[in-house]
Amino acid sequence: MKNITILIILAFIISSCGDKKAKSFDAVLSSNDLTVLKEKRNEIDIEQQKLNDQIALLNKKIAELDTIKRIPLITTFQAKTEVFNHQLEIQGNVTTKSLIVITPEYNGILTNVYVKEGQKVKKGQLLAKIDDGGLSQQLAQLEIQTNLAKTTFERQKRLWDQNIGSEIQFLQAKSAYESQTEAINQLKEQIAKTNITAPFSGTIDDILTEQGSVVIAGQSQILRIVNLENMYIETEVPEKYISDITIGKHVVVDFPILGKTIETKIRQVGDVINPANRTFKVEVSIPNEDQSIKPNLTARLKINDYTNPKAILIPQSIISENAQGEQYIYTITNKNLKDEGEVKRIIIKTGKTQGDDIEVLEGIEDGAEIVQEGARSVKDGQTVKVIELSNETTKNSND
Image 1 (cartoon, rainbow, N blue to C red):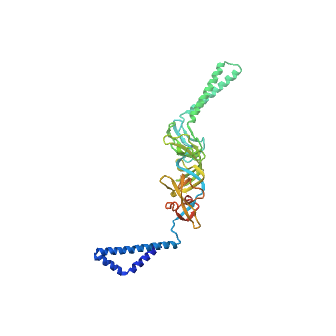
Image 2: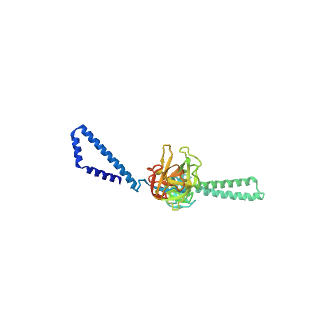
Image 3: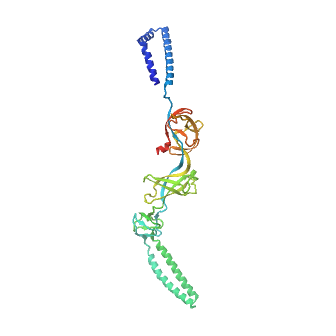
């Protein structure tokens, strides 16, 4: 409004001068007379000064009559205490203790595989059979000999109980029978090693050796069995969190590939710091009723490592720093009925961050009105007008 008024006045004055002055100026300029040129310049300087004085008077009068003040417009939000659960974000891999590749305990030919890939099996169920190389025939013969030794021993025992016969005959019969029995037990253990059974209930994930192949004890991989019920995530946490990450802490687990998020807890925390990378191991249990979570799947963990039940959170974007390295924000005081108030600079001390927000430890009380939009342009002691008061921080409005 000021500029428009000034332009109108200047246009009026200039137009009132008419073509006469314009011609007079051109005549003086083309005269090449130094004295005349200087006189004309002085004349114009005097006219310019008069115009400046008139403009100053006009500005003063306009300021007196203008009811709309030129004060900055800002937005604010009200500080309030809330529960702040800080989360440590880290990656981990899904694993299970019920995932093994079965190898044989006996050398021989894999004569039979009794299961198929994807088949559910019970603990102790027979999965495959290795040719025993004639051990079964040896066992049959040994059992016949053992039965004879048993009969001889029982007969000698009856006679000995009746004080008939010598003690040496009784002891020899007893020793022969016990020796045969022990031989049978050892042979049965050897034969049992030719049977491959399920170490736990689960699913046959892969058959790695075909029927008819020669297998070597402790080396050949026969099949892989897995149980997806007892799943967990193993991850490594920096040692600085050793006192914050404990058993039972709440964990939010996100599986990006599955688009799935679950809530669980820490079930185990390692007691040893890895000297190579200064971390300790953490295990997080994973419920897997639908068995959609597989071993070696990557997961993102958010572990609750810090909780403040009465925290004040503010956007990091409104914080400034002075030459001394102190952080500060602006609040509004002495606000009138027209929502006009005075800006006050407040030195604060901050704590942990979460996303775009930061925890204020000192400097701000519950209920304080904090400058949000315009926080970078206002000054301490400046009068401003609040055009919006939000009871939610930027974090909450974004959520």
